Length: 315
Image 1 (spheres, rainbow, N blue to C red):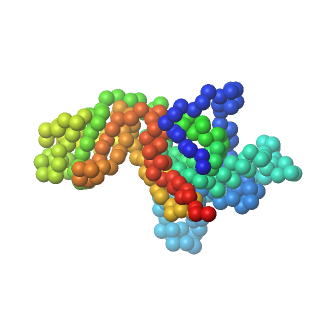
Image 2: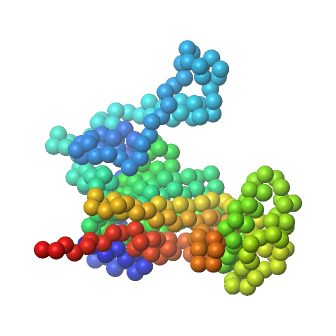
Image 3: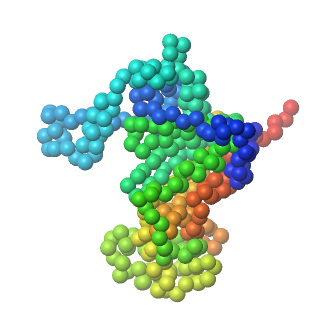
């Protein structure tokens, strides 16, 4: 069994090309063609765009909803794309002998992994979904921000740390400033949840009351905060939100019950903060400022819990 160590920097590549992942942009129709040529390999997502509105349908009589309009626009965008077999041939990715072996292997790995990461990142107006799949010494990833064009990449597992660092890059149109949230904030979960609900409802006047009646102290860098400071810090966690990151990790071995681990970050004014639930002192959540490049380090213990080790069998 391959041991996945995301906390150790990757080894120095023997050549420039060894240090690079292979990347390829594919439209959704092209991706589906490749998946079919890879033995009908299932893709790690399920897209069913809504059908265009017609005059005889209920939505046609009453007008399009936002959802139906977006589905129609999505279907129209796909309809403008050229025939995927022709475009793959023009790009040299498809010949009479079949599709490029590297592309077929990457799509095949997406369908038959040992470990799966589903990644959802939103920062400002940008949202990206990505799927990382690992088996043995190889990793394949697929990502998209619009469901039309996808980036397919494949690389050795030793380069996974570098690839994960791309996930947390903050867009240039979101400059970092200072934050009212301490570097390490520890809050009762019920208080963090209720303050968020009060702010979403436009009842910021309730925040001091909620803090005063909280079951547990609010800690900043290990020190207890007063009610006013606590109200400002917990409110800032919600008010400063500019993005989020969520990773679901799962071991997909057929021999074991699937286990799922979660990594959650929130993007505040000064950058990324991890959100970690704790139950050693009641239900609490830690909000800790993290380096963007530390995602692999944060993910490593989650993977250790998710991966199911083989149990020795009696001969």
